[in-house]
Image 1 (spheres, rainbow, N blue to C red):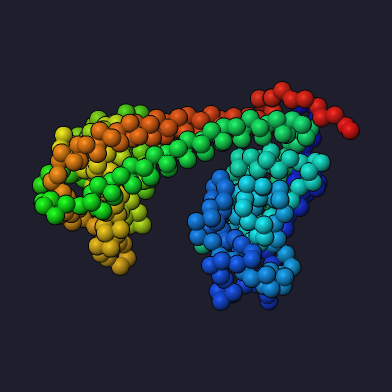
Image 2 (cartoon, rainbow, N blue to C red):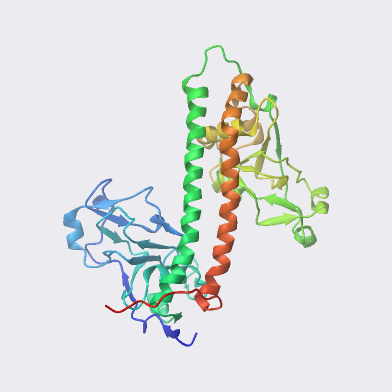
Length: 400
């Protein structure tokens, strides 16, 4: 590692550029649904990349009035206010040619002859920002503190080799995510076609609770920390409901915790629905026997109503459940309300649907499990590669 140079980000020639905060900063009236220049807000920068699901634009005239905050290809965007530490790389894969940032983030610009942008992106993602953040109500990351962060900078060819190893893992993870989106979209399209668009007039509907067993959970006493130590039973909290498969949980509880609380063992492939708070209406599918807290309602599959159908049924009922949520301080729905949802009794059609989509669901679960393995590998390798504990082979670039 003798060729690695320990230096501050400032001395490495890395530039930090904030957004324009002057009199020409866009007001709400300046934003357009479609326009010349994409104006990024912090919500458009997630933990590992851009999210263009809800974009705002400004006109070419407004773009010209702004002095700072314009992205160049190869720039990194880092959020510095609110949710601190989210990063994204503005490379050739981003379709927008004109992009500016708001004042809640910073542009990081590197000399390409000194620092590889992909390498530095991974360096930023493994940093712990807690020691640099100030403010409690609205956390902020001052640029002056960013500049003083130290980095062990390997030669440029080695930087690129390190980034290549990590990006190959991320590319595989991204591919599996995209496969799952496609498979789920196929299953949902078929569900909507068969059970909504082609709904038969002679179908009968009954209350969900009359044909599907439901259950809620409980929270073992936090005063007995032994309930949460060396546990072997997965315990799902409502904030973990992710619209997909749950294979692991943040916390595990013991057999004794289940016996001494209202938590109940739920069979594999139960569909979970969040009933309280910010996550109300969110849903997920467990892949093994688990338990849940009292803010979650579980729907247990049976022969007539398999989990593939129940999962898609709940997904398509999400908006209806949210609309029926009550309470001003904390929105909530009840297990009673869920049990009263109308569900068709066309069990032959439901079984036919299940037989068609079950291979897709099995593939999605396999992909989720593989994603978790790859993410753990990447997260384990990342600090080791950045510190030089693990080295990669690389070829020295020839000078033309």
